[in-house]
Length: 518
Image (cartoon, rainbow, N blue to C red; front, side, top):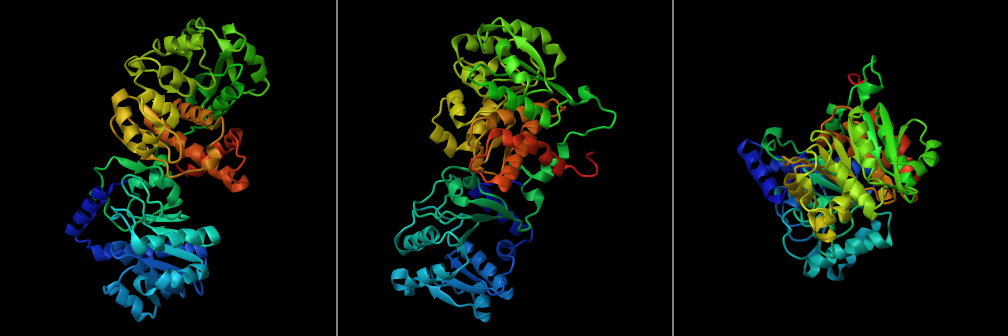
């Protein structure tokens, strides 16, 4: 599932028309796709009040088609026209007797307020990808009324057609009046701006409506959505004659006296995604604390500078034992004390060049203090920064990163020659060659301590099962996000903690399997 910019979408539509797929056909399919999503929301459309806000362009045309299909299902549809429409789709709505009100005839917008109050669903088909200027005048007032209606009556469901009106499809910037949609049904392909701040906050849940554009017209695009159908293709197989070595041996260097839990979460996650064996290299002092909780891992106790803090001399211990392992995870909960920095840099820059590696948390923060660190790091490294860590690594403000998440991940994956997992709402995974994937998921429940440690462990555990850094990252991100959704469905997203994700990881992977993946 590709992610597109506005110029790319226009070029796709142009090429589709040249291939015999006219704009009218795309509009018909778009309207039908949105109507089907409304039906899913309501279960029963017949007799339900649905308001469709109709803009002056193609987005409004899509809305008219949607209104027609919903009317045919018995819905009580009302159109609110931003400007006069005389096209065939409006005529077809008139033929069905669908009532309408024009904005310019609605003094003080009293008619609009009544319609908003009486509707179960409001379809925002006012502005689509063509929005390139601030909302002004009475149009702005109309969009503001939609937002007010949602505040006053939370039960009204706001569905944005392609984009919430006022959201820039390329940059994610929003007009202050842009409504907070519950659901955005984006047409053909999701637009980049839906995954960038602050637009991502206004889009709500994102669903893609297939409008039948041939796949060969978009094969050249290198930004995509991580989907279950795609990640299923490289789900590691589990042969019956396997042993623990078949599924890889992971060494994780993590934990300190102040961050004992990080080591637990990382190791447990690696096991929960199917790694055959996980060994924790940690300060001697905290080993006894963790041993009663991490019963399935083995241990490599490390010398300490002080209780709970790894000594630089521990580098030799790790390098001596490293040939026994397939993957190294480094960083969760290590701390950033001066001697720990020496330990991390000495270890990272002494690793075999082809060793699969995951660097997270304090490992990333320590790397950011070293000039040209990427030139000394193994090529098979995966970096898993949150926006703050990414800002330190690439010397950018967090706000700039959040406004250009896809571009930043792609740019620095190429510059550093490493796979980058930029965490946060709509996590981005980018490989050095430019291929970039986005997880279509934003779960605020993941905004709690330790969830990143779970992700680094999951990626490392999958990396040990002979997946490439990029595929292991994408599958790990998908499993991690899917686990958070299972917890949300059961308990909500307030109070979700990192350890809640652990038992859900294998459940997500189980659902991905089919008869050919035992």
